[in-house]
Image 1: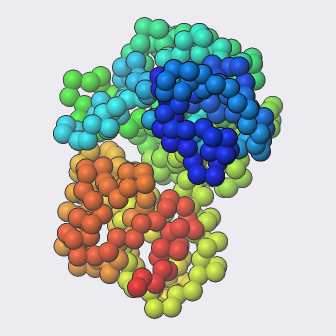
Image 2: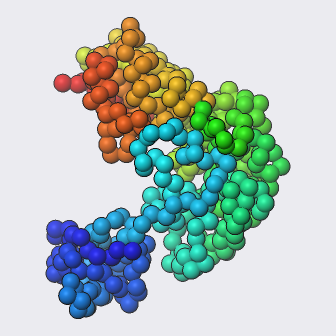
Image 3: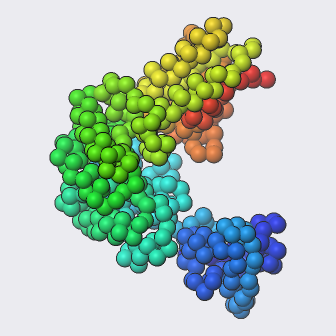
Length: 434
């Protein structure tokens, strides 16, 4: 734990009050500050009383008046004001265990930290929680919390998570539900393990507990599974079966609660070769980060952006994406060409040789595959458009540590980075580069 202040934002309430770097934050409004959750919660009020320890060991008190919800402006040596908590599970389907060797260290770190669930939207199993921490969540009424459920049958949950105490977190789910804590769930379907009647049981239990929503997503399997449990990918037939089961319960929930509550990820519709549901199905896209409605949202946004687009003198382009999204993005480009026949562009779905051909999402496309499959392409556009999720967040680095500049040099083309929404894709296509 480190609540020592490393810097103070210029012009912030803390700076105006004379707080200095090097002091340690001990308490806010008579509550001990342990980590970022305490800090965020207790400094929300418009009037806060602080207890600080100075470098020489003396303590002082001061009161700060500010706007409600305004941050004090204090910075610490880590975002969490503590070390991130690694996962204590050994999940049969864990993607980190399927990573190839010799990649950057951060890609092998498994976090299962409740604080990152609240602050960053990460999904966690709750197996790392102590009773004190669970009670703190209830006392502070911290919501929402995103939960990796996988199964609610105690023994099956223990097996899937590879943790003999994994069923303990089921008690936390029920306690949170009774306390009115908003929970969003995720179930990774592993055929032969937690599908069929097991999936029915999990859905019914989550209805009883009172989850706000839950996404059903297919297991992701790479070619690096030597020594790991035998898992099968989701087939076309299995995908259709799961869609039907989830929709059955979604209809029940819609009638009883006014929400479907349970949603299948887009990948199931792709695998089942079924059309995507309409926009109303997704209920404001509350499970978008889990790939639920991503394609429908992108399509609708792109077509809306296309209405205001102006062609001008736009350079030819190649959109590189994952194999799963290829037909959908190709359809959008075709719509753009319908409006602007002079538009010169193509869509290329990158086959994932790096992780294995069962991986089809754009977020796991590497620079090496991008270069290998595009550099000798005779129809390669003057610009190459890629989605931002191919890169490390906030940085121009691919999963395999190649930089944007290295890829541009190898292809002899400029990369245009598009955010993962339809408006950004439309803008990237019609952008007139200098």
